[in-house]
Image 1: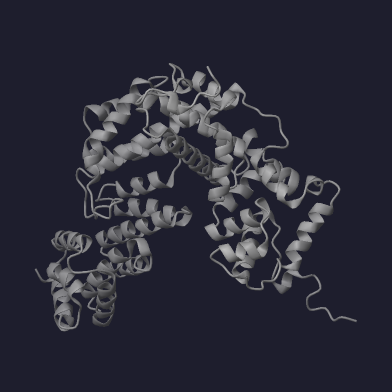
Image 2: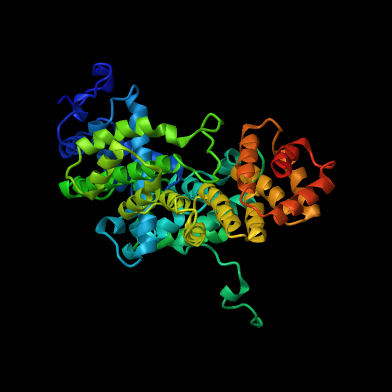
Length: 203
Length: 304
């Protein structure tokens, strides 16, 4: 199979060769090794666009299998790029939902894949056993909070730029990032009782 | 560009402490590199192992079957719906989900034909392909939920509980309201809760739920219609007038949704007692000259 094969090279109304086969395992292996649909890159980008915090590799593997599975059961789409994006969105939705269901049903039982997220474990020192809890809580936050986290911390944009281009002023952005950091335990407490020096007379 | 302050000092200080910690990998990269961490370009070796793909393929298969069963439950229910308003499609018009059956069958046939193994789920789908009956709706929603936990399926589970079991339905729907993070789904669930409370004769409780729904944009019209209607049945003239006026701001007399709700309410009226109907008509009679035309359409159901 030519690695540079483009979907436009396929006959109209047919799947490209890398999506053809009698076995979805075989199609999925091919897709994950060569990645002609750029699913890895597009999955990560889509997570950033939707402000969803799950390990991009998980989104990638789910998208690969969703594409392989769909290619065997669906008619070829007119627009393969849009079809692939829809599968990426489906993959993200499934993983987010599955994590939430698992966290509610058995919070202490995690699959190995659910503990792996270098951004959280290596950068933010989240215990691997807590990765799913943190991401489920984060992904359950409203869009504004999630967007603030991604724009400030993931994309590294400057505050004035974020305020200018977003649906917020500086106060709302501050509240949003506070909300976003709460699942990580990084928000700044605002209650007096959280301040060990509250109520004590200063000398 | 307007003058804006920097990120709050305490948050910046916290992030700086993380960066300064010798154990933190963050200090090895500028702040912008968090994106490269997220994209996974830096660190772990790629693991495209067959095991991971196999696991994800199994999950994709389960999700696909669960989706088909949930859709089947929806189609089956809509072959004989009870006091449920039709959904609004992407084109803004009401549609009958039962009409989706032919397309559902096409997709299901492919999944059944290519199923990796023939288990009870595949056999259930095969039976549905031979004929999808209204009475199967709850069984199908249950089967879907047994495969994959999904609040959309729990919604259909609550919807499809037989009408003569309102307490069971309320139990399911109540739990869904507590747990769901989807606001649109929660809003639609409120309407189902209201309907079941009415079935139990708890009109005051039902009105409270509908008034809550009336504050949710997605279902506000339904909430207002029902709270106006129930205010008449409860003899609450002041509230009925208020709800009528709010409804006037939300809808127009020729609105397809309003007309469909009026017809549903006519059907519902047939289950009310003579005393209840007298109260409703008396209340309506006192305010009918002050309500907007939109509420007047709903009032036709009470007056008829």
